[in-house]
Length: 85
Image 1 (cartoon, one colour):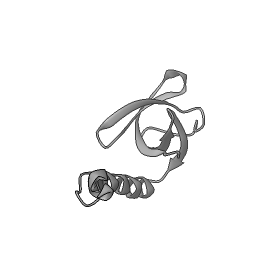
Image 2 (cartoon, rainbow, N blue to C red):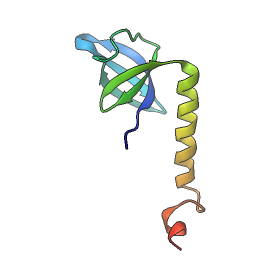
Image 3 (tube, one colour):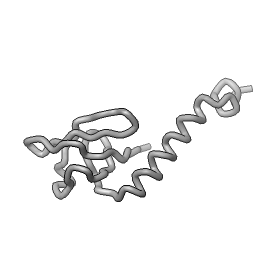
């Protein structure tokens, strides 16, 4: 299964690289597949590459969904021990 995370470009560096952030995490990624991306844009990040520029609403909705899934991990109703019973 592949998962791409929306992240916001905070800085564009030399050599087609960029700094991005989301949910408190920062990464350095390659912009080879999205050379049109600019500082402030949201991009889908997969395996260290920005694979698509997305709008802010899509990014926010996706990040909210990821956060909800993360919150479920801590919910006793959904954790693996409870489901094994």
